[in-house]
Length: 224
Image (cartoon, rainbow, N blue to C red; front, side):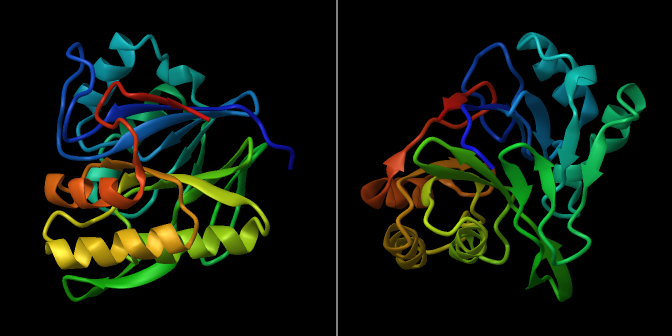
């Protein structure tokens, strides 16, 4: 696949980056690549997702595909509502270990598994090719952000991980634990991080010591 310009708009997050938008627990972002629009996760409340999309001028019917990172309500809660207005959107769920193409320049990295509150949880990320490397979209990173980056690097050998965008599941991590994740991401060559959703302010501050900190929050726009 050839590299393409990539635009990522955060539609749903615990914080807002644009005062016109609503903040709520959960995550969703719109990825525009290769002439396609991909909704990565859907947030928890369809009314808030659609409100934010409307404020940004994003028509839900323009979504070509949906990628669900993992089966938690704050990432899947608006899926049914989205499909009610765009029933032909292709949905990619973390149901199997194999990567799947989603759009030109974008593919899931395949499911990784972790134990969450006593049960086995499947989670996938979305790797999007950009100039000079790739961007990795993550929902909560329950298997660990470095593990998801490594899986993407296997799929895209020779491509640099420019940035990781989304939740890193570090809100309850100690400073030392966050430092270890930051160190591992830096060693993998990750250049920047947009610490959304479940990352937590303390961990975001720690990550910013080793990696370029990108803007996050509902309404933030990232271009690569």
